[in-house]
Length: 495
Ligand SMILES: C[S@@+](CC[C@H](N)C(=O)[O-])C[C@H]1O[C@@H](n2cnc3c(N)ncnc32)[C@H](O)[C@@H]1O
Image 1 (cartoon, helix red, strand yellow):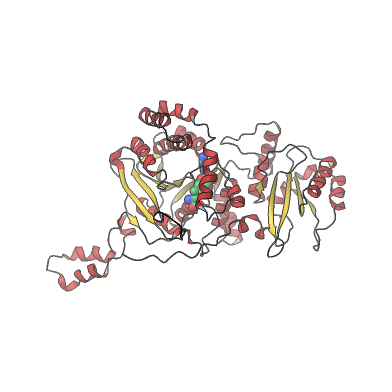
Image 2 (tube, rainbow, N blue to C red):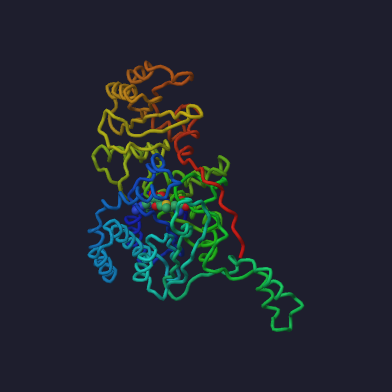
């Protein structure tokens, strides 16, 4: 099974539980954000990802507005102790946004526990802001006795010279098993012994207390401690880095997957971001499920998995992957557009609509944070005009009828907004001659051979035709979005 889901993992988990109430997943790892409702694309644009304070503020803003009461009530039926615990937190003076966050996590973790196999493992990646609360929540869901490890992942990075406290440089990964039996492939994750221990185990010492079998095991290395300092934070300088905020290093995921699953097992990540868990699981011959609420994440995962493949391999790989919540062909795209027109805005799994699919998934752009009616623009892409200046492509998406009046309005918007290029998206059957003429009238993009206003049909895009802009789409928004200027991590010290 290789399956990607777009949407809120709560809806996805509920569906899975209804289908497999006895559990079917071997390993779940999650690395949820502090704020699950915030659109990460916005972070690319306006939050300096090197500034943790700015990130936290961005997160906190949204959580304070999340309505969690319904999910809290849902918990009363699912796990009364958990409900009581959260209700007490709600009563005492911890912030509302923290209660909103914890309630949101509690319901989702409850369902993750349900969909795990009896022998399954659950890893929750968090940081010291919330880890103490999350541990209590997991104790109430998995049972305290099933906490296998609290893993401390230490990394290195710059701090401010004005700091009045120690530089916070560790994350916490809580590992719970569902039951009394679980997978732990220690031989696949052993650490090398220290030089001192190696000396003590010299073959000559056989007979002085060490048995042959001890020597064999010794050669494999030692059982790792529950703190890891040998994995650098999301390999900024390496090719691995995709620019996705909070991307985790693949080495970290490989260790967890090797330790707690076997080849052919099913590994799931319900907050999968740019797909580090999925990439590691795929590489290690595991089946996998990934879910994310952002289109951009799903698109990135697909690119990440298929980029190294040749064209034929790509097509086959994509055929083998199921993507839930996304149109795969023109008929399903039309169906989605139609449901949009009928204002059935929500897909099975959340706030997914035709415009978002086009802007984020097909074009890799960023959607307009303000939902605008006709006569505006639905998304944008930026590109580098030169070393300093960014250019802007505005996108307008038509799910229903499109006509020359719409095109005229769009050209006006492009001029008013002083955008560089405009892309008008609709189905092929909607394009008319007057529309094409009106677009042509806007002329070429200065200094280039292509039009300033371009009509791109859904059919074109499904056929891999792209917007024409300086540098091509590869030079566009996403790749430029993270201005990663942090120095290289200090090389890990060996203990
Ligand atoms: C911290 S990032 C995960 C990063 C990931 N570990 C990686 O290495 O790329 C958290 C992800 O959770 C997603 N997310 C937030 N709320 C969600 C929800 N309710 N359901 C599914 N995904 C969600 C966000 O879009 C984001 O991509």
